[in-house]
Image (cartoon, rainbow, N blue to C red; front, side):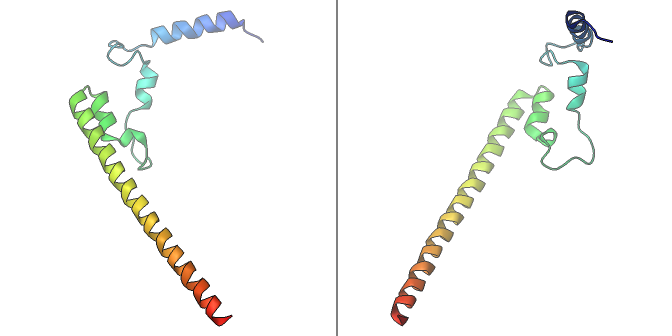
Length: 110
């Protein structure tokens, strides 16, 4: 049994309009289902974006707190990245020193 594509699209469009939340403008015109998908759950991975405090503040309408938390998280990420890059640079320098030492020892024994 095949359904006419135009009819299916019209049905889906009506379903979308009917399932909007009462205050849909406040929730970016998301449907009830879309809003429920982002609800916090137990037992999710620690990297799940639903656990981000800045996102939670934004969903609660606390824009200033969300922005401050986002800036704090970004600064923390920058510091971690900088430390990781410095560590990699240090390891690279040590690697070259070990290589030069090895080559010198090799040339001495040759």
